[in-house]
Image 1: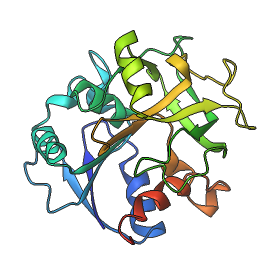
Image 2 (image 1 turned 60 degrees about the vertical axis):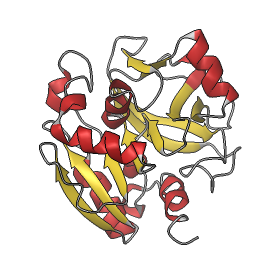
Image 3 (image 1 turned 45 degrees about the vertical axis):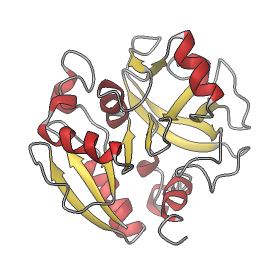
Image 4 (image 1 turned 90 degrees about the vertical axis):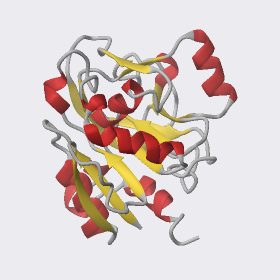
Length: 230
C-alpha cells in the first residue's frame, strides 16, 4: 500500500510514522508538504502528530487551511482513507472530517506518558484485527486531547458505532481514573460515518518497534494493512 504522510510546519512525529510504515511494515511512503496540491498517488493519507503552526489559535486550526487539506478533503469525500494521530486528529476535527472537538486537557497541563486504551468496535479498518478486550499500552503527548462532543453528536457516534478506542486501565476497565485528559466517556478516537476517516490522540507509532520495548501499536498498523492483503 502507498502511504502519504502530510508534513506541516511544526510536525514532529512525521519521521516516526514514516519509519514504522516504511521500515517496520515494509510499505511505500511519500512525504507530502503542506503547500502541495498533489497526493502523489497515495492510497492512504496520514496526518502525523506535532504542533502544526505552533498550535496557535487552537491546535489544528491553522493547518486545516493548508493547501494540501483541500486535496485531503476531496480525497476523503471520494472514500479515500485518512488517519490523523494526535495533532492530525485535531486537524481532522477542525476540517470537519471527524465529529467532535479536542479541548484543553482537564488538568490544563501537557501530559506525556503511557496510557492504556482498548478498541470499541471491529467494524473499522484500524481496529478490525484487534481483540476488544485487549488493553493496548500506547504513549500520549498532548495539551489539548480532551475529546468533546455535544449530546446529539455523542449519541450519534455511539449509535453508529463510530467510537474506535476508549481509555482504560491495564486490565481493560474503563474508569475515570484511567482517563488522562478528561475526554467525554473516555473516548480516545473516532471514525466518521462513512468509516474511511480515523483519528485518535495516542501515538501507536511510538509503540511499534522492538527497540522501544513496546510493540502494542503494531496491532493498529497490522489491522490497516490487512486491507492490502485481503
